[in-house]
Length: 80
Image (cartoon, rainbow, N blue to C red; front, side, top):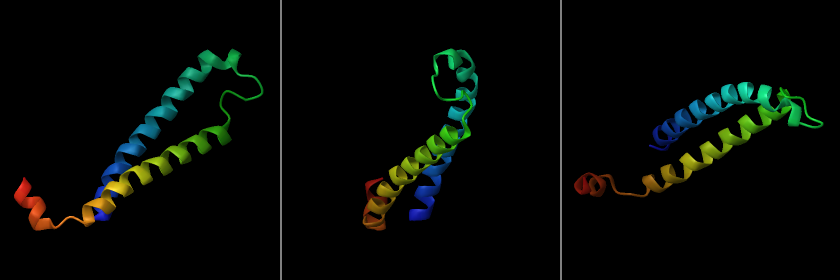
């Protein structure tokens, strides 16, 4: 149960991180003149931000998954 809920949440997080990286690659070209002391395409920054967003997505999907395991399945089916 936890695996299913976390997998669904991680799919959304991975799509969001991927879209964010692609958009950032385009936007950094426009903002390159405003960056001081950081290269526009610094791989350490890109990897660090992507990993932190993936960690937040994992935690955000893990908490509801753990809460869902404490609900009686029969009760949950009756509500719907």
